[in-house]
Length: 407
Image (cartoon, rainbow, N blue to C red):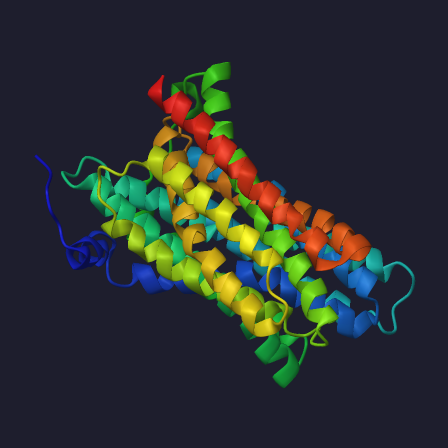
């Protein structure tokens, strides 16, 4: 017999489980991650006058985050989230502050200064606290053993997906507002302040106790099959990141060809808007519509809708196309995170959650690079072939995940 629970009741239980302060705290604590790459790009470009150096520094942030996230996740699984987050927050605050100072000295520094900025940017990425993945791990612990766990966890992960989307829209917007309106060094300084305060508060929040560290001696050795199963959702997140990065690159070429090179980020926000709203809707999808079926259906929609990106011939129609494309993206992300959390081996939830987040970062870098090369050679139509290919990969991986699940 199925249990009917209203959407309001599903979301109302979240503050009851975690405390009223946890939801806004998690939202603000993840803002620095969304501000770091764009903030570094903006500051280094202004202070050095070199877009090439700015791109390398911003890329170093992304690379550092992709490498550092699963390391922090593995450490949290062994030592507990609170300790790891407190250490990461302290190190990251210092690294970001040092990056600001190094960038400000570029105008009069010697030849060694650019390498120093890139090294500090890499360190900033390596030490970035992984609030989103850690919050998801906490929800899994908080809902463990509850009668309505599946419904409550869907609501929690839907909220987390929306929070991610909102921060990755608000973060770059905040960088632009503070950087252009006041000073280019202010966005990174604000990110360091938010890390020192909000991430520290997130680390000390009582929900950290919901994820109990497991001593290494109690961990079972994973078989090849178990490792391969975990790699399926990680590969899906790499595909998802490739989708995002290539669309950004293609949009840059598209708006440039239409005489508005500064509007790429604004158009991309349209995709994030519908993605965030649709992510919230997953909590009301029927329980019978399981994660495996969700994956295949959402990936199919992403693939079909992404073909629409070839049609627009002006900014208005491209905005409408992006609004459409964003609809299945949020549910797709929620579904993959949900599956990743459920198949995570005992004691390795933090590792798996951060590996999924790293997949998005790595995929975004890959999509930006490939999409940028194709855009340079053949314009936006050539670059838009990459998100279509990434969506096809998502669909194939969904079929693989379904086959593995049935076995």
